Amino acid sequence: MLLLLPVTFFLLHSCFPGRGSSHLLQEGLPWLKTEFALRLYRSMAAGKNGTNFVISPAGVSLPLEILQFGAQGNTNQQLADALGYTVRDPRVRDFLRTVYTALLNSSQGIKTELTCTLFVQVGTPLSPCFVEHVSLWANSSVQPADLSESNGTTIETNKEESGRPAGRGPGSPTWEQAGAASVQLALVSTMTFQSSWQRTFSSMDSQPLPFTCASGLILQVPMMHQMAEVNYGHFQDAIGHQVSLLELPYLGSAASLFLVLPRDRDTPLGHIEPQLTARVLHLWTSRLRRARMDVFLPRFRIQNQFNLKSILRSWGVTDLFDPLKANLKGISGLDGFYVSEAIHKAKIEVSEEGTKASAATALLLLKRSRIPVFKANRPFLFFLREPSTGFVFSIGRVSNPLD
Image 1: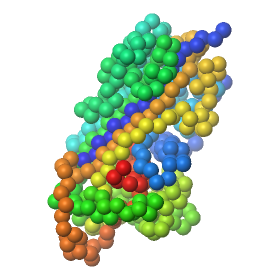
Image 2 (image 1 turned 45 degrees about the horizontal axis):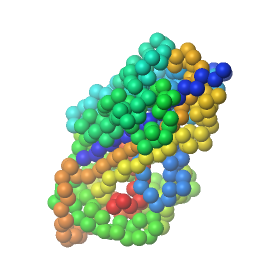
Image 3 (image 1 turned 135 degrees about the vertical axis):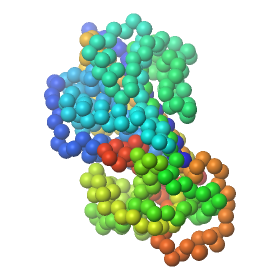
């Protein structure tokens, strides 16, 4: 069972103090979306060696796309450069609407929700054109709210039943510090992905096995096991590192979890991560072959929160956060809006069919020693991907399954 619940907050203030250009597609949009996912991953991973984390590129890009509808001049260009595309391009709009519509039509065994809600301070004027764009974008909506009362405005960010925001406005640790009195808009995106494996891991086959952390520490962790026909490949990156790639599909094959594992136990995952590009991932995933294997994967649960503001600034998105330079005039026709906070929360849980695992004897493994083995018993990278478009729901790293 996989459960993914990312949430992203954008708090927009107004201060009202007394160069738009078209960004053409250089490559196919699926590749650009994948490049955005990898860039976001590398930025989050920087300086976090040996730690677990998960991010949702879809949950981050969605509010940025909506902000593009209201951005003008240099602010708009910086957002386009960060995303790698602009929603002002009709080809981009058509493609993304098709993708988002497909994602929202959950197939058998898969529950997917991708939403973005724009909470608007009562009395704040909005451009009808902007409202129309928001209402047509990925199940997004505009809701009036009293954003001046931080204690009375809450969003259930961990509501696993639906993944949809509830309440009248955003609630987070930074909300009280952000100067609620001047907040005019709050843009909150949520994404939920929940599904069962196409071939389940039996809880009776789970057992504690050693996992070598990045620090060299060896821990006994709950390790799931199955023998199955899987898509598998053995590749070499640009500087010669040997890499194993395994695909584990979910029911209906509408999405798969891909696992990237260094074949050499002495090769740190951090040496492979910089070599990953959209082109490399496309090449590797297209060359996977069916193989009958023993698959060992630790159960893991990761939950974290990131400050997107610092990351986006490092990408050159600076005007958006500057009260004097931000140009979001397309939102209401007035100057003065800027983004004060950008926060991303994500959670992922990977297990057998949601049941508790029980320990089993290791003798079972010895009987299967002649079958090729994929054993994620050291740090690995994972990404959840929709196969037909290459859309990346989430990407992350497991360095210690017990953290």
